[in-house]
Amino acid sequence: MENTIYSLIPPLLAILMVILTRRVLLSLGVGIIASALLITNFSITGTFSKIWEAVKGIFVADGALNTWNVYIILFLLILGVITAFVNISGGSRAFGEWAMQRVKTRRGAQLLAAVLGIIIFIDDYFNALAVGQVSRPITDRHKISRAKLAYIIDSTSAPVCVVSPVSSWGAYIIGIIGSILAAHSITEYTAFSAFIQMIPMNLYVWAALLLVLVVAFKGFDFGKMKEHEDRALATGDLYDPQKDIPGELKNDLPMSTKGTVGDLAWPIIALIVGTVGMMLWTGTEAVGSFDLLPVFENTDVTKSLLYGSLFALAVALILFFRQVSLKGVEGSAVGTAIVEGIKSMLPAVYILLFAWTIVTLIDELQTGTYLAGLVEKSNLPIEMLPVIIFLVAGVMAFSTGTSWGSFGILLPIAGEISAATDVTILLPAMAAVLAGSVFGDHCSPISDTTILSSTGAGSNHIDHVLTQLPYAIIGALAATIGYLVLGFTGSTLLGLLVVIVLVVGIGFIKGKSSDTAVSE
Image (tube, rainbow, N blue to C red; front, side, top):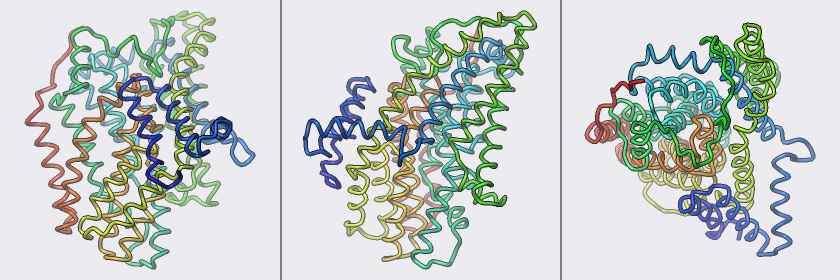
């Protein structure tokens, strides 16, 4: 069953069930069982054994602790506790009041979230959760639905990281490009200069970012997103209270009336400084010298997130006990903050555990390898290569839930095909891999970045997937046309211009002004 068309069954089954049932854990569970059955040729005992191996691999790999996954789980739980302490200290309330005096409209609130998503480009996990924590008090006050906030976060985090050379994504991609150039003896440019030249060719990224700005400026809401936005404005319900909301504190917490903006700002600043500082530290330690790109290529992202969150937690605790000394809140609330903060993140942790399990089994089924093989076997005109690779990368990332996995498989294949046919198409083809992978990742309910965007925004996960999907498809359609233009004309500028005109044109024709204030 491995590396065959049957390997597509489990991910597509899980995704279809998610859309039909809206029950993400049940759907992922069915996909996990289907994957294990195919791998073991429908052996019942083998199926349970295979699932156990996949689950165990989340925590233990090669006889040692799987620190990547464990640190992400700990980071999520600590972030939940930090959020609880910030709320109890009165930081969220004070920041919301401060922001309402300065950000007067729904347009301004959405643009603020988008700008924060663009400027925090170090890592997509960090981006999704940090931007959510900062933006949520403002978007909540302006009655912007959590689904809309999740869309803004998701459509600025990965797209910005994938075109930033100084990010965990950029370092990883530059490393792969370097090996491709060396393998095919290409010396016209370095891996870094190739990456820089590919930035304007990453057409889906620019479509996604432009679309976020158009949505904020013109109120371009339709489909499920319009339902969420209309409900938020009419009733003040930012999400369906009957659904699980990861990252949302379930019980009312005591709240200090003496809190200031600093009670929210300082933990977030500590999180940023601590995380970036640890990324530089771990990267320098691995490289042996401070050379920025190699440092980011070799940094330990999850270790940096964990230590950065511990530093932020220490700052949040100091501010909490300051409120205790000011008689703003009782010291006994410390236990409540820890318990409620952890509980708020458990839904996200459960989804991540299931998603990691199915991704492991899908990898063993070689779903991505099968899809990549289709590209290699195709005999389409070379001008069609960028658009075909874009679409295949989208399907691969959608099916496997990982853009990084798609990078690792498809970038070398794009390099091999280009080197064997027409090396001038190499950079557009590799850029199409990056663009298609981000697109598929945006659409996939089993993607960890999609899950964390839901968590950061406090949105129901499936609501986020279904509301974002139409916007991602619009961006992908514009990028598809752009890649056709780029492939047949050889002009990056013309392909990018087509994307800009299509996205802005659709938004401004169909949208309406979103520049409205919301009364208290």
